Image (cartoon, helix red, strand yellow):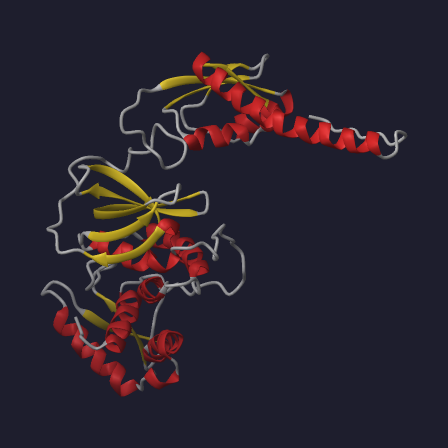
Length: 357
């Protein structure tokens, strides 16, 4: 492979064209294709002439195995088009099928929507290489929107954390917990996940000997550690979150069945958009569903978001705890009602204040 970045871009474009048996690319077509991609990537200064293009042909021919040739096939009189003697061959040993490449187009366009976010230089380069490699140009129309919070603290660590995770490099992290306490962690990074607009890093805590998750927005400082990386032999992140809502996986807990009863109109919403993949309908008539998972704060928050449209039926301990929290909320609003009523009595007794709980 060429060491020069522009040459690598050119080879990627030519390789894709040579393996495409659906089109016939002559020398003019290939020169236009290559220069279009180079212009998109680096501007007009990197564009080439036909002489350089033919030099690239020679260089690619030297990379081909004995069974494959770069053929110049005559057509339409004096013209000829260029392609590999074997369809779908690639000097990049591309294992993607034509249909997979087509599916990749929409993915690249969606990734392109992340361009311009803080510290996304690494993503910019990845997208550019994908666009050139697979002949996909990001759609200029704004067709897709992501729920990314650009004001979220900690986004500046995203590229460094991903690099450390990929390269198996332990991290020294100064962290501020939710209650304001400062902690020092040596973390062996394994996985990065976004949930509810926040980013989380998962890894093995050197001191505690267990998997921890750290929210990006609570990281105060981050640096590479001199510790030897410890490979992940603890969890499979493909199934790690199967039994929770959110990102918190309890260290020592048991699965439980939670039964929830909804108002009729909200029941239709919940059945069309399940809270969790374990969700089952217990009774359509009574609008009751069940969830089998671990109890987490994220689960509570999700249930609270339904307001008066939900009732916790079981387990009993959770129903009691949930009821106490609702009662605490009611007391806050009850005190507001009493305060407003007292003020009304001191002022005009004709004024009616209606506070509904």
